[in-house]
Amino acid sequence: MSVKYSIAALKNPRKISDPAKYYAKAQADGHLTLETICDNISHAGSVIRGDVLAVSDGLIHQMMSGLKEGRIVDLGDFGHFQVQLQSNGAETEKEFTANNIKKGTIQFRPGKKLVEMLKTLQYQQVPKKPVKVTNGGNEVG
Image (cartoon, rainbow, N blue to C red; front, top):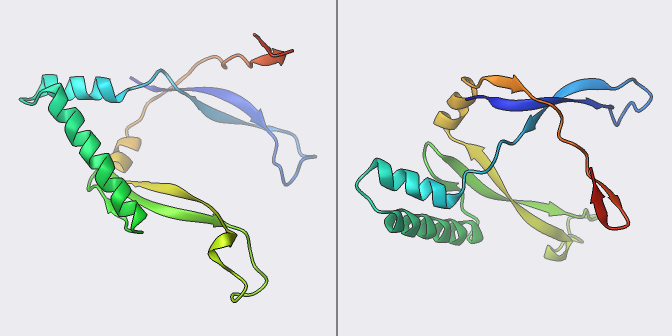
């Protein structure tokens, strides 16, 4: 198995007059769904699919609870999750209020095993995916 990529010409937004350079763009090769993961885990061990799904649902509930409390959710070799904030600036610290916060996002930092896996990836070039152009609301291409 390998990670598929295509090549794209991209301009530097800070130096728009410079010629484009070519970069790799990862091309997804389908989805690995929670249902498939539950089935695979249940076939590899002594638990049934429903048990795996129940644990997954419980994990998500616990993660949401911890993140709402401002905690870092540490899932060991899987990684860490933490809420990050995007806000509008204020002229002074005194003028800053919670109303300046636009939204929260979830930051994921992969664990050691996932980081190590990245070092073993193999790559395969594939054709670019066609660009979908809309023409009066209809997709073309």
